[in-house]
Length: 232
Length: 332
Image 1 (cartoon, rainbow over the protein chains, first blue to last red):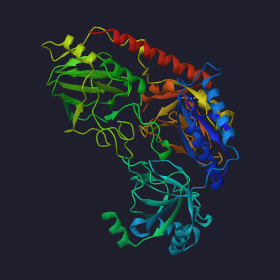
Image 2 (image 1 turned 135 degrees about the vertical axis):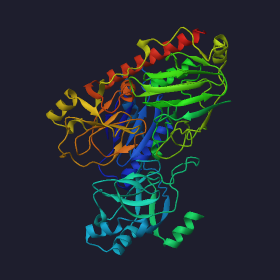
Image 3 (image 1 turned 180 degrees about the vertical axis):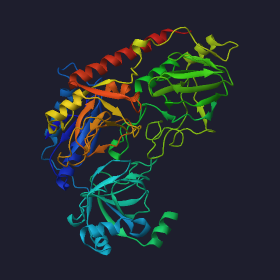
């Protein structure tokens, strides 16, 4: 475990290199341990890939037992990590199935991605649509999942120039990840399809459909099914 | 509740408070006022809780008609604020008579101003905050900047605000007490600040030349800057040879370096994770100065330790506490 300051009110905690399932479980276990016995001044923790960021308010971290606020926070994180080490949390797997309409107006970059890899569009859809994924981070915009598990044959460097408008629900490939745009935003990933699901709702708890650690599968739907689902 | 009609929206005016921490793991940025200290001081001047919702003004402010009597305060950048052509004082509470048309003109220095109204701007809390989340379109006024024709409401003023308004009551369109927040307690708003910064997680990735550029160079704020971040132009910090990295957490004030070497300073509406190397983080105490630079202004950076940045933060907090006690002791 490596701790470094991220400015004057956060600590970046790195547990490893690769965000595989074991690593994501360890990150979640540490995040849960911090929430369970929070230090005064703890604000929130943000798991992402192989680590998490711990935000704190230096004005509220007690200083009486010695040391600067950063040292106090770092010691607390170290203690909580030691307390959870080796105790793998109960494996609660949550699977979420995301319906996707691939190609056409819903996936304008499908053919380009296929051409990049010397595959047919159908092969890209088959490989993307049958792989199993895990959410390694939620970020960029509210509810945007970074999914690991994209077959290596589909890894695609981001577009050199981002699109100014990527529609909400767009399923896209960016580097080693696949992801879903919850809102219409600019974006540099290759859009290969679209889901009618709403990924973020500020009035729901939790507001994000997908959480770090969730397992995800895609299910191919037709244009007619997409239309029916998004108008219902 | 009383109504405030938006006659002209200004360049970019949003409802903001102190943000909505606690939802970053769902990808929700904390957001909130860019110059949080200026917003807190504006609220204190009208007897609100420090984090009440207020309007954040950008370069040119809105024109508003107050249907009922109101106690207001303007802080932050130096906006030309007038009623019927007569200049209103900033950094003071001001009582407006019912029906007053308040014109918030252009900012002479600085970029962002705050208009607080006694009782706060009454909009629903979403995910714990009342501020505008522009990217996701929630919070504030329907998740967007103000438009002409919008009608804002303010909540019930505090007893302190009602008492002060009563003492200022008179025949004029506006009236203010003689006291104000002194220059020494106002956050800075220069056009060429040097920002104190703590070494970032990837500081060691940058060679001697890049560090020299970063700590010795001046960077111009480009027009592609907004509430998400300041995009700077100046001596490059990399020629593109930095390793690829897995996305990890970022903070407000984080300075990211994309492959073109031109740094981006993340502001309140930043993303929650980022994949570019982080050379440094601006000290929280200097986020106010960051909020006040505009395209064409320049910034530089100087290095401080985490402990020094935290001491500066605590000193700024003590100053706000002093102002708070001073204001509570005043009536008119």
